[in-house]
Amino acid sequence: MLNFTDNYARSFYYLRLSITDVCNFRCTYCLPDGYRPQGANNKSFLSLDEIRRVTRAFAAAGTEKVRLTGGEPSMRRDFTDIIAAVRENKGIRQLAVTTNGYRLKRDVAQWRDAGLTGINVSVDSLDPRQFHAITGQDKFEEVMRGIDAAFDAGFSKVKVNSVLMRDVNYRQLDSFLGWIRTRPIQLRFIELMETGEGGDLFRRQHVSGESIRQYLLEHGWVLQARARSDGPAQVFHHPDYLGEIGLIMPYEKDFCASCNRLRVSAVGKLHLCLFGDGGVPLRDLLENDDQQDALQARIASSLSHKKQTHFLHQGNTGITQNLSFIGG
Image (cartoon, rainbow, N blue to C red; front, side):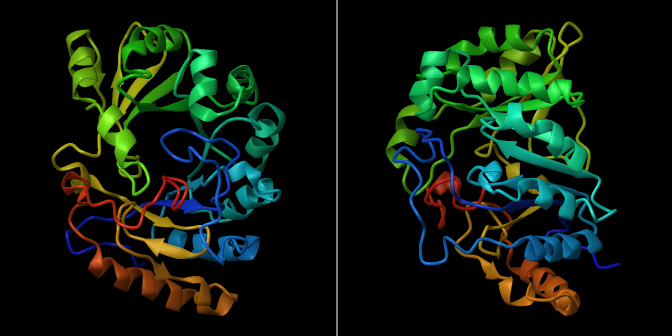
């Protein structure tokens, strides 16, 4: 069986598939001015059949996990159908979504019935007023009820993403830890990453996750081993907590050494890195079912161009103007 492997012996078991770049939130670190179309192709997002074909090609090459991203994936009216289409691939054992949570309460049960196995919800503050200030939406209580609904629907764990910002949530660690003491939530602190449109914010608010890691280690938290299709988080467990802490630190040395994920944008381009310089077009090979071998071959050959690391340390953010563009 063909496996997707690059020149640095990294194998790719994880696909992050963006299905829209539209989002209804205006988060300060991503879309502070709200959603703006990225160009002439913005309305032509991958169709259900194209999604079926691209995920089939990845599954046939050993992909075990798919994450549906955006923008906000649930803005797609056919989102439940997309879940079911991806789950047609028996080799895909995990299918997750990253969402702002505003439709969780209403729809999460049907998402689970369609085959969704994992949920990440973005929550950058446990203070409703600060949540409103960050997202531009007064939806904190609605998102909290959505997380409860996910547990009610049968999800045993929910992951919560929180972008680490110096003057916003960095000092709320105690509140976050209290929140997960009795809840099976994996709280993931993500270092703020510089994008083309977010340089000023990055310089004001970036803080390394190293201080949180040191705090956790000094207070009895233990680092867990990674599975091969896991994301980039360093996950910590504590015997007194039902929840977990994950740290995603893209500025740490050797962050890219364990890279196991590829990205396909909502308009059908393969991105070898979130902060790469361009994308490899795949859409011409998604028109029918007869081009699967050619599609796999193009993806495999593209991996020879994947660089050993990103260049965020040098301030090079590639083509990523904001995190909704490729899917974060």
